[in-house]
Length: 337
Image (tube, rainbow, N blue to C red; front, side):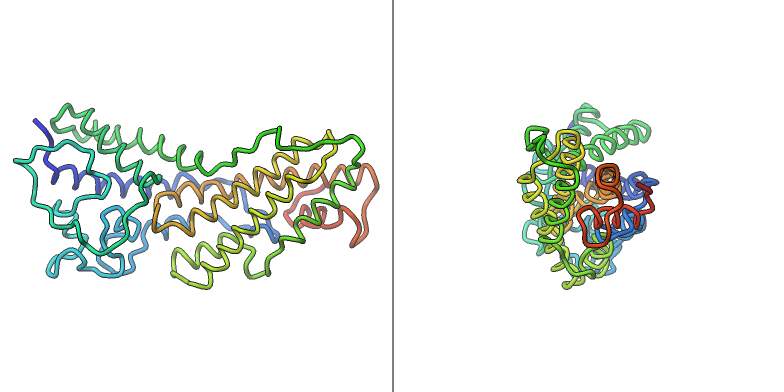
């Protein structure tokens, strides 16, 4: 016997809520953000929890979940004049936009009139869209067309959560490889450090537009248009740094560190851009926030190695000299070269 569409809708609502809320507790790591212009020392946990709970129209259906159902996050009654959108979802009256691939028994299906509900659908092929399809398909397969027990359903959700958390991060991680790095034994570490500093200066952003967490908080929690513009600009700055780093010639002994720099800035660019597109792919934000701390930590380790190389090769640089900016950033982050 096929599952009714109504049953699948109600199960989906609880499952997708669990994904983001649990994710808010498991993705925040112990590593502090770089205490510098790259990112402030601020945990992503509170931001992720706030994003999971954000409800612009007060209908008890979080904004990210409204995107899954195509309802309007700014109108509590976008589906029905009497029922709130959350009530309509809980009653199984609204079809998730990703549920079209699920086989259901038409005789058990609740009439659906949500096709023209105003709102924004998840982008086709997005992480949100793919997760929804995966959940529905695996639920139907695991249930053999019947009903799953609570224990089996919880086990399926836990398995999908682990898979999704990994995928949400993986698709945003930089794909650059060692072949992207140009090396030459004619370049000194100090000359290399000067090139890195020049790249950063050429792609600089104002101080109030340099902290991704603060900007994400303003955009995701407060829908601040100024924060959105700055976040877009920061993403472009990260992309610009990535592009310019690809043209830097590197001493062979720092090839791995330079690749880490390229990958880190590219990942930051991808992650911040994903947040600016959260209406098209709300669940991708989980991957973005889970990547920020480890990415900045990797970036810092690369700069730390370079700074130590400058000191070993040329001694402690004075202000304005090659390597001074890198060492200043490293020390501001609490590291000792």
